[in-house]
Amino acid sequence: MLKFTPSRVTCRAGKGFARTPGTVTRLRSQHVVTPAPGDLHPLPSVEPVGGDVVVQQEPAPLSRHLRVHQDRGHTVLEFRGEIDIAAAMEVLPYLDRVTGRPEPRLVIDLSGVEFFDCSGLRLLYRARARVLDNDGRLLLVCTHPLTLRIIRVTGLSRLLPPQPSVDAALEQPEATSETL
Image 1 (cartoon, rainbow, N blue to C red):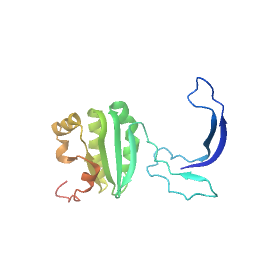
Image 2: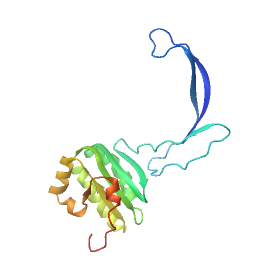
Image 3: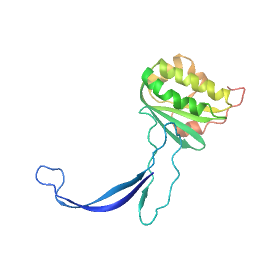
């Protein structure tokens, strides 16, 4: 959540600068609240106070390889970029935190992944085991052909059937104990 107060300043840019001279309205930041590491939920919205402008900011990525948000009662973990051993070490603490909760309802979204190796597979198997231990639900979204191939070849697609989108995953019926 960022709180800004508008102020007027004069731009004295001259030849060679990207801006032309004139009056510019700028927003001066007065207060910044950022989520603590591992904080998985966006901050609550706040109404404008005393004429100040309050801007709701999208939650910052927890790491450069992970963004987290809520959708229809599920925590969506968006993996991004190259998921290799370094990325897995970066993502693991956050993954353990959400999968360790009672009855977690999670979606792991791999649609933003460009590279996925056995370290990423380990994350998925670990997440699945922890979610099942805590009586939760885990759904998988994957569209990249090479990542889908790895998931199919290893048999993970039988345990976590990949869906083409978060919407499609969330439309899946709840599994019963016989289908797990």
